[in-house]
Length: 124
Length: 124
DNA sequence: TATTAGATACTAAATACTTAATACTTCGTA
DNA sequence: TACGAAGTATTAAGTATTTAGTATCTAATA
Image (tube, rainbow over all chains, first blue to last red; front, side, top):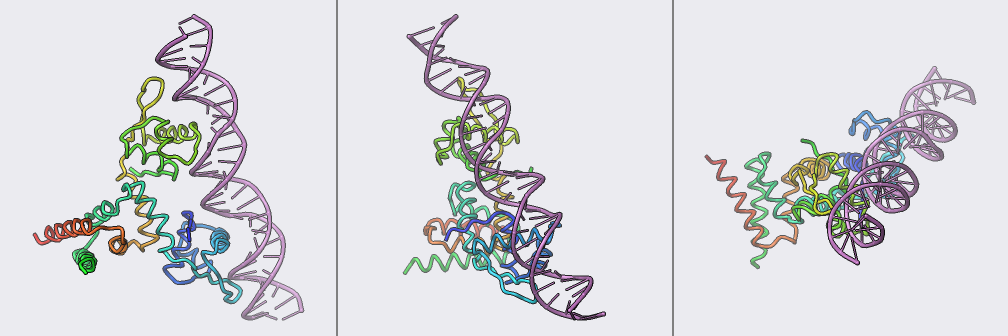
């Protein structure tokens, strides 16, 4: 599946990913930006047309659920960043991320544990 | 500096980052996609207007040079991917990247070395 | 210096994305 | 059951992005 999301669509579906599901009003509150109710509705309908979300009735409103996961969108978004900004090198990107100040000691240790695990596997 | 690049602009300037500099024809060949010569020229002129590239004369043609670096564009592009697709968690993104098959043992080891270095620093 | 291939400048059409107005519908409740 | 608040459907305007046509310019060369 090749998923393409516009910026605004990503804003909107990200709310659904975080909350699991949401009504138009809830998405609107979460996205902020002073957008009109109908604007959020339009975006959700577009997403539904593409079958990236679905809805169920809840009273007179709709409750929307994502039908794709973040991982489905990663390929395209991350892949592009990777190709164009890091010459396609995962190592380079990881190196940059690891070098950033935002990571705590604990996080670094957890990451190292994952790497160790991967290296261990390869031994078999 | 806040850098905003459209998709096509990113395609184009990525060529300049890779090659150091290029003429319109060279960029066109690298980008592919069957775009007209004048299309690439337009994009380059747009980039020049924003001062993300500059040019020098070379015969009757122009040779274009990037004036911004990949790192200048990272914040926005990567930040967005991070926020929306990984809930802003660098750890989560790194974990996903590290778990991918594409990484060789050698790369994993180099990454671990960088983590160890970072952890060492923190000890001081 | 007249020609011409190859290049740029200018302009604008086509497409994609974002936003929201207006009309219509639904459901609780007076 | 008539009303109103809250919701949805339809439609389209506004904006940004992508693409390229046409006119013009430049520099090598016959």
